[in-house]
Image (tube, rainbow, N blue to C red; front, top):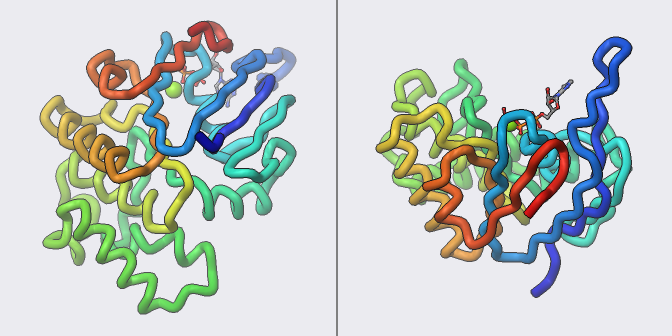
Length: 224
Ligand SMILES: Nc1ncnc2c1ncn2[C@@H]1O[C@H](COP(=O)(O)OP(=O)(O)OP(=O)(O)O)[C@@H](O)[C@H]1O
Ligand SMILES: [Mg+2]
């Protein structure tokens, strides 16, 4: 199967005043197209750090990273953001929706940042994405009018609207009750079944059990 993610020796060191924090100490990660992978491990083991690097939200201190055939390990700032916009759909634990925008506007936002897509097409794609996730009746609403599970599905629609090569989520059920969490997991499973590549970080063994493969981290390294 074609490799979608090929990372070698990914390292991240944060500078905290005079102290270096080695959050990631050389991770090798391969993910094939169409896989469903869960990243697990104790708090502070580097899961979010690794996801942020894989999701092009941050640049590694050292290491090589090829995402969907593109060398991205050395990119910063706007160039990294442009790759992220085209290739990655990222879902956060706390949804990160814009409170002043309608859910349709929230979902269309990545297309606006991308540029070159007419307003009418942005809206059409946002509406289609929301309808596909069963949120068609919520289109004119604001995030605060939705339940937690609905908000997270809006965030998933936003992650998908740009047609990313990969869908990533950091503790996507962490702020949800068990019923809403199960609904969000069914959404990820359905997206995986439809051919999407999915990587998610989780504390929850029940969530991890849904994935095809788990990557286990401890103390900034991949241990299994
Ligand atoms: N911006 C930052 N500045 C300094 N240190 C950081 C920063 N982000 C993370 N760290 C440190 O890096 C290490 C790994 O953090 P990370 O957030 O990746 O862990 P995690 O496995 O996602 O934990 P959790 O399960 O609690 O979310 C921790 O020691 C953390 O304190
Ligand atoms: Mg984390």
